[in-house]
Length: 211
Image (cartoon, rainbow, N blue to C red; front, side, top):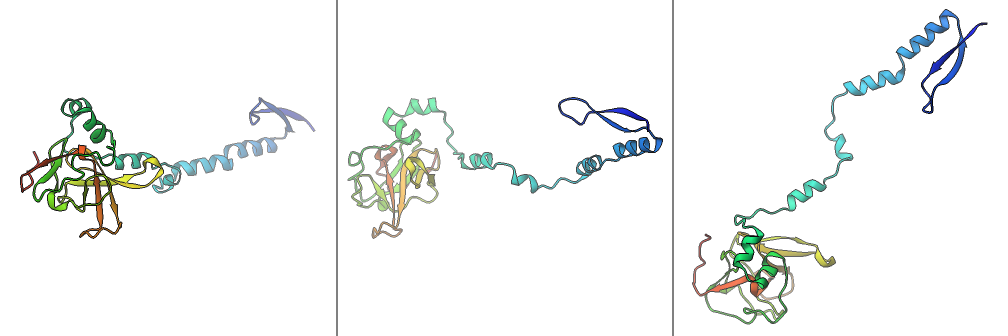
């Protein structure tokens, strides 16, 4: 029987020669199997298949989504340089860089007026009234509640612990943290632990409207 050499490219390292019978029927069989290979059909089927939206979710990352949802937008959008121009270094460190003043050193730690409003030291938005303040003994001004809508809360995972940070809703300035369930005999059983540096007290009985 006569044989002929066929060169095939199925080897990744180069060509491989195979010997097949030179009969016409064998040639037709080889040609037919090459044209109608299962691989070719499956490739066409995959290309023609409709896109399944949820399938890609198993292999995609939601990191970008998480980053977008954690970015807060505040009405007062001053730049870092603009904040530096109106805040002293300590105010900037605490309000804009989320610092903390030393316990027992704040101006409003032992400040208990009968009336008045505590405004944000950055944008002057009203945050707390004198009626909200109580003696906690923690070393920082403590409030059991805030003016509705004035304070925004979000999770703070710094220092290896989960806390709830509070910021000014108008400018995003860092105020401190809020703690719950500590047993204080207040209407909310909450303690807004606020840096004095983040506040500016006004003796006006009614809170001022936001600028």
